[in-house]
Every structure is written in structure tokens, then in C-alpha cells.
Length: 416
Image (cartoon, rainbow, N blue to C red; front, side, top):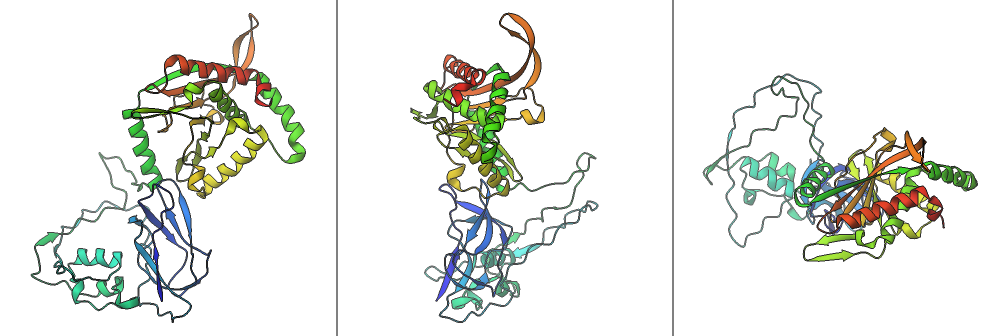
């Protein structure tokens, strides 16, 4: 019998997604574990694997379709015990690429479209979501169509050749097409780039964070010389194991241990309660092609720096490839964002809710610094903590920043 392939829930909070790309076509045979499509969630682009064996007989949702609800039938698979009869023209085709640069063209006047008559109550029309959408746009009555898909299912090809039914409902204006070519604005040429789901989520969450979370910022200057010396010694010792520690690996450990030392900062605000965490899971900001994402080093305070380094490299690679699993980026008790590699001296990061703090670290640079009462030159880094003032008092935030500074300036505590 035919098997309906439905839009999967690739994370606990996913309600809809974008079908970014089909990796199979009508007539292809698939086995359990084969990659069928790439699906873009609000966090990452993830691969969708087949769980059944058979032949693709129809693709009902075109690649590039946005807002596809979880549970929507996106394709149909013929099982091994039945003949696979692909429906003509049922395969979804990608839209043609827009030209790189064209002169602005006025949008055409909206054309009148006859709305489809509603089906009588109790009468069920079996059609793919794409076919229903096209029928609504064209004013086609699905009740009068004979489906060519599996089990008489009405598919895209059936609707495209049908004529609208006159006099079945009020006249509705079709929406004007959205321009895809660069359009001048105030005389300044620009190119409009459609936001992906990840960028939309970043925009929404950061806007909510700045509007709803009262941020308080605390900055300390941290001397790095001892940490850099220890890093060099550890890398020599770990060279045979193929491990090379970065400064960021040690800072992850330092923040995690500081949170354990100052548990009042290892919390989150949850309306009428304060959640106090018993371990420090550090979310680390990674710049991926689709946008910023924060993979998590779980229980970082209890792990050795070599293990943190190995895990972080693997997580960063998966983040850049869009292959992180939900449990690898959802959660965390605090975040770390490091822009030091870009030469940024100091910055204030936006809290990643529902967490209550994020640490922003800048570049280590040679600065005049007082050491043992005498002015000298030292390698100094500025670190700024952003705290949710609903959950963390200023004095507690200051205690965390002091604990972090002490651990970095006396780094043997990171390997003890």
C-alpha cells in the first residue's frame, strides 16, 4: 500500500519548516536511512531520512516551500508489494533563479480570480497541500476534478490544467507578485535577500530579549599572560594526542567553573519562579552560513580542557555544516561569545533567553598594566557580562566576573 511521507518534527518546538531541497525525484527507489530532503527549521538546516522502503510516486510539496506544517504530506511512497506508477508532472520543480540585476518594472495590475466554491459539509476532497493552494489561487473547484495520484489523490498536475468555475463565489483579487529583482529605494540600488528561518528566529528572539529583559552590563579587564603560558605548555603535552587547545576552550572552562563557584548566576527567570541549575552547560556562539547558532558544551565544569576542546571542534564543524541535532543546541545555562579573533576590544552581548547571562570577550592585547605595584606591559582582555537583572543582582554578577577573572589569571585552577 502507499505510504504517506509527512513533514517531520525535527525538534521539540518545531511547528512548521521550509522544505529547502529535495534529494530524490519521482521514480527513485529509497531504503531506510537514505537522505530524502533537506529541511530548514528555525535553528538549522537538517537532513530528513527515509524510514520505509519503496519508490517515490509523487512529490506533493515543492522545494523552497515555506511554512509547511508538521504532519503535512510532502511525498508519497509506493511499498515494495505494489507497482510504482508515478503521476504525470507530479514532481515538484524548483523555481527559476532570478536574474542578477534588472531594471525595475512596475508590478502588473492584479487580475480578478474566481474563488472556488466550498465543498458541502461531509464531502471530503483528497488533494495534496500544493494542489489545494494552486486551486485556491486559480479559483478551481476541486470537487469536479479526477485525481491522477495514488488512490485518486488530486495533485499539482491535475489542477494546473483545470479551468476556474464561473459564478461560484465572490471575485477576489490575486496578490501582486513579490518582486525578486533589485529595486531602487530613495535612489539607492539594493538587492533584497529573503530571510531564512534561522535568521528570522534570531531577529525575533533578540528583539524579544532586548524588549523584555532588563540587561545590566559588568566589565572587567583580565590579564592573560599566565593563561597563555599554560596553554602553550598543555599543547606541547597534548601534541601526541592530536589535541590543540584554543584560548576559547580555556575560557569555556573558566566560565563554567565560575558559575559553579557563584551559583546565584547559574539561573534563569521563569515568570513566578527562579530556576537554579546544578551544572554549568555553556552555549558557545558560532557563526554559521545560515546565521548565529550556539552549540552546547554540557557540564563543562566537570570536563577536562582537552575534552572540551575536542567536543567544541566537533560541534563547531557540525554547526557550520548545518548538521547539529536539537539536543546539541537547545538548552544551556549561560553563553559565551568571543569576538577577539576579529580584533574587537570590548562589546556587550544580548542575552540568549531563557538564560540569564552571557559573557562577551574581546581580544587579548598588549596594554600598560600595573603588576605588583609597578607599571609594566601585559596581555590584557576585556570581558563583559550581560545579566538579566530580574534574576541576578548586580553584586552577584560582580562576584561571577571576579571569579572568572581569578580563574583566568590563576589558570592552574582550570586543570586541577
